[in-house]
Image (cartoon, rainbow, N blue to C red; front, top):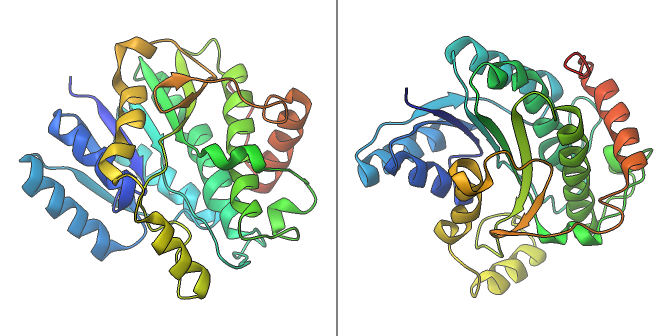
Length: 281
């Protein structure tokens, strides 16, 4: 049976390149896009480039309720989910809170993968072998985490908030891996390289600077290679709770390996999401 692979943020950048690569390999690819027009254009582009059709699910990962709705839509539509690639990311240039009072970078970079991974776990278990891939960033090493400030953006900084939320994503990856160890599902995080995407861009002077810096960075197609490898390669079958720099397994720093901090973040995230995230223990 054809394997089904979900790619969040699949309408642009690395996500679109991941979807195109997987479609060319004849997997059943589902992209999640908040913007219907951009999502439809991505489907058209990928179909024309690969000769393969892909699915589009319109959904917003910017709030807790809308992320839960995305999970519900996926469960309703797909009997099997073999791989979830949490690729959607946000590098906010200014502090913005969503309707839940959460800083948008924390919501998209951490809470959305946390919610989707938990709510789709049962379907992944019923589709073994199954994998979750979290697209991360090497900048996590600059991250610090204050559980009373970071979720709400009280410690907002253009660079540090992105690093902080990527640190959250790695802490979640490691804690989730420990909790699902006996389920047959694996979860890993990957830094795809320094890639030329639209992350961190808006209309200000900082964005102009970012675009100039990015001219020498790699194209999204290059950045798609490590996540695709981690999603489908037999080389990493059964590998769980690891961090990869490109395709090289790399030890995380001391803070990212802090089990007590990871458990504290898990408790905070569970309370914020209001989901039963321990039913599978």
